[in-house]
Image (tube, rainbow, N blue to C red):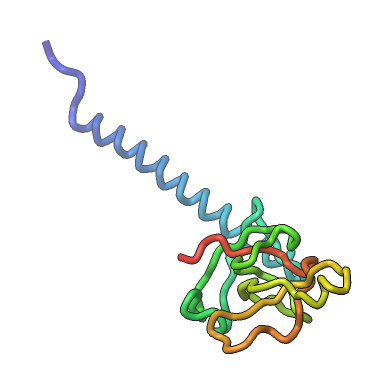
Length: 148
């Protein structure tokens, strides 16, 4: 009795699997490139960060958060409402016409005493003093959830 499984059939089957694997990787790459272009254009047009399934990579352009986050590093942020922020969270927030990543260090007691909604005090880990401008919770866009 002769076996029907020859070496050429094994190579043929492994070639099919390899082709399928390469097609899958290529499809994922094309999807990710298109998603990146879409998110970039959306941010340019709206002026707001574009999130995919609630997350977004953010490139850090200053050293104000070193040693926790280095300048030039990419972190992952998760979209959130500023009212849900907790002291100690590293937040992405809008200040003037740009976005800042700093740590939420305290509630502004003065705003609490005036019966207002508590503003937030933020600070870069590498800075010697707190940010002068208090943060309104509505200006918070996201919090850092991954620092690779």
